[in-house]
Length: 259
Image (cartoon, rainbow, N blue to C red; front, side):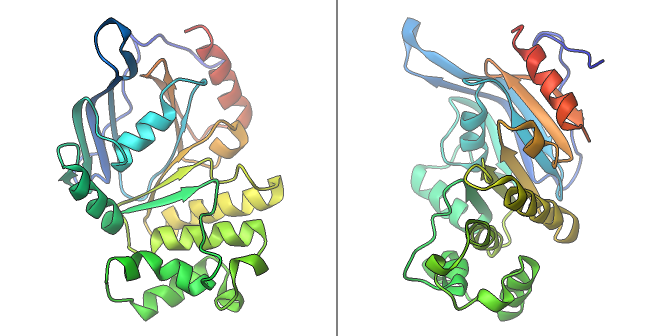
């Protein structure tokens, strides 16, 4: 039986020491002001070590997407601190955050967001081209091989399956050697078999490339691929499970309904 807690008694997950990939301290996010303000995050603390694979879950409106946006620098918190790879990003101006994300953050979304006129290889290297950075041919070849696209590198997205397109998106997210890759429902548009292949690939990147991955999902089967599942409820940390099965995750989520 999984023990459930209320927000006032839940202890935060153990915090990694040196070499943290991501750290949030007391992150609060409010929309609006005064009595009509909506509080999306209520003092969230989180620290992730390099090479970890973490899933974020919670009921609808729990703050999952808001947490991802704050952690990735897509939005700035109302208060609190966000550090990515040792850099404090919560105090950066919008243009500074944009440049930082371009160089140090990877994104994988449900929509593949590939440019139809570019080949697999060109889509993967697009972030480097936009940043006017040098393309490391060895790293590019390694990535393309790692995601199983060696024979497809010169094809256009229209000639790829959904799973292959998502593999391109993952390689594109990795090409800048980011501090963290953020994935928002990365298998939502895929069938279960193809989705499992993509999740196995994300898990592979944490083991073989020491890449930190943070994934938001509503699916316990998807979350079970992560090393740790962190639960949110009403914008607050609501517990975590390590190495959990889909059944255990489902049970925990059911308990969050008591909040």
